[in-house]
Length: 139
Image (tube, rainbow, N blue to C red; front, side, top):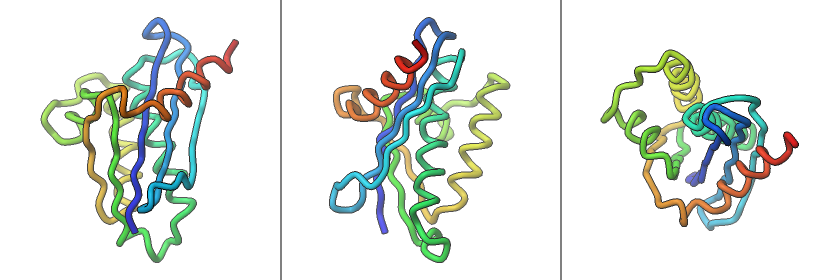
């Protein structure tokens, strides 16, 4: 099984009202799940991590336990920082983001293979819409 996650997080004010959103697609490109959550007052980078965490939690609920170890997941994000931190190119220095990365690695461990790739914002519109919708819900 192969899934693609488009994830995005944002904060207005950084820190400020933050939201996370993600879309999960199957091998045929059909949307199988989406998540959108208001996160309170957070930074943009916190929200970016949270978007992937929420998406992987949703995917875990969809994939039967006996198939998770064979499941491949491609995470596409417009956050170059999170992608490079997850690839080991950048170190995670901020204590809050260290916690977020630890939570994300725990979610990753459930699946066979999880890879990260950076995409331009224009290729992440669905997730961006959901993150903004979550931020708007705070009003």
